[in-house]
Length: 140
Image 1: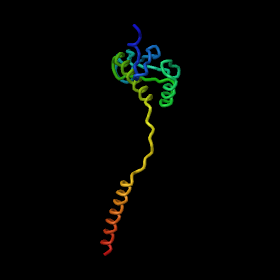
Image 2: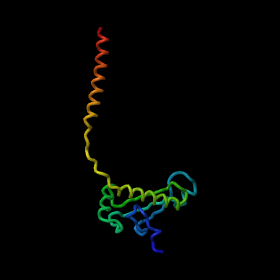
Image 3: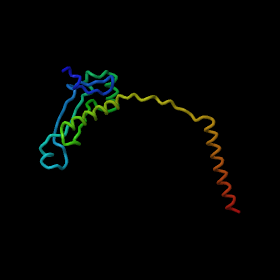
Image 4: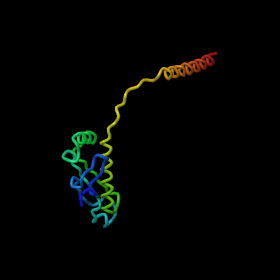
């Protein structure tokens, strides 16, 4: 076993080994009787972004800047099964990291074209004259 099947593939260039993920399990909250009180089905996964050797310095800085934390904690208690909650927690971790790694395009400010400005001003003139005509008829 080379560990590649245990790794979390975030993007094409980012793969986090399973040994960098810390798991905790506990009882799910809410109603459910004996099963909910005794079964530890809630899964919580912690990933230390600041000390991860699988991330480059740029990736680490981008993720910490966007998420605002050096340790990312994701939990899931949607399902009755611990295995399904583990999968949900891994998917949520993958999505949070992938979203934080996206580099947003720089927006270049633009101005409206001459035709658009003329159409807008022409529409304003037509609306003003329409209202002016109503006012004249009202005073007569």
